[in-house]
Length: 208
Length: 271
Image 1 (spheres, rainbow over the protein chains, first blue to last red):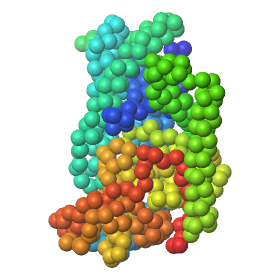
Image 2 (tube, rainbow over the protein chains, first blue to last red):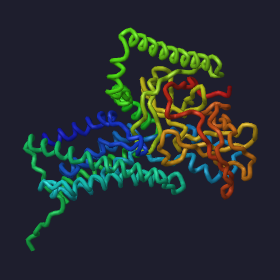
Image 3 (tube, chains in turn green, brown):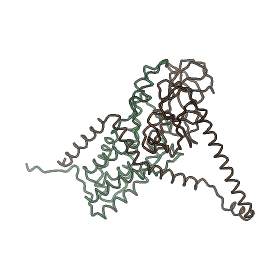
């Protein structure tokens, strides 16, 4: 219980620390997304209900802090009245929306957290190789899904080289940071006498 | 699956649906509140970032420094420092004079001056944070400009800081016209253009439009968000697409050197 509460508190702190993480200009302003990476790491260490709570918190805070929500009477809608722009009709749909809605990150973090839950037995044994690799995998999936959804909603598929460079750099930084986060989680688990147990799929004998 | 896990999953789905059903004003209010909570940390991180950048960028060669220390006398050093300080003040004075001059020349009489604190740490959006907010009269969707041209528009606003969606972001679309012609189009950034000063795309022009490289692109004022006749950039290249023409536009404002900006206080009006 104490471990779970500590994780939730740490999760909140990472959002504030995130503000202090600098961007790497040479890698298309790639950066370590501390709060999401902490969530991905913590998702291995906590039970399923706590993981879902963390996913909700992370997704909600992420969208509240970073998602661009355009007001309905903003430029998009007002530009829809622009006349004299050739080929406008096909573009009007793209103008009236075309971006991720508030709350999409919650679902995304929930799904990716479920993936991380699958490697809890390895984490319990103290094996960090696969969990670190999985953090990289879910980070790049998270970024890729976001970009694909934006691309899909805005109407044309467009994948410049810079996007891949940024995603790979973000992922590498996430993978570099994850062992440190796992170390913190293990230390915290020891300090709070918490045992990381796998409670997912289990064989049950029904007696017949 | 255990009962507790199932209940947790159902609660999670219900919470997701509830959040996604929130209307735009509510989500914007939530974002403003969250931004207000984060504002002190944004300020603190900007201070740390600036201090670090200054410390790193000071290229001091110890040997060179030693030679200088030996060679120069104390009095000369003092004079050098004084001279440097004088130059800095002169530069700052000139900059402020330009800003005051622009403010007086500007057709917008309710410009709010703001300082750029830092770039935002989001994933796919080009935005930056300024040190003024709703307490200073800033509201969402207000044009942000410099004495050179348009920078973007305000996004979410909290009492003491605001986010500016840059012209280089694909979300910031401006109705634009090519100076000296009747060619109108919509100017926006490109998805994935994550460098500091990417080119813009002016879409929906006429095919075979007589547009020469170097021609100014200015805002048309259509839509009401951005005032008319604001310089947006200069045409680099014109291309004929399937059904319309498209121009690659170099931004007028150097986004890598943005320090001070102005926000049009009341909603945009044609000057």
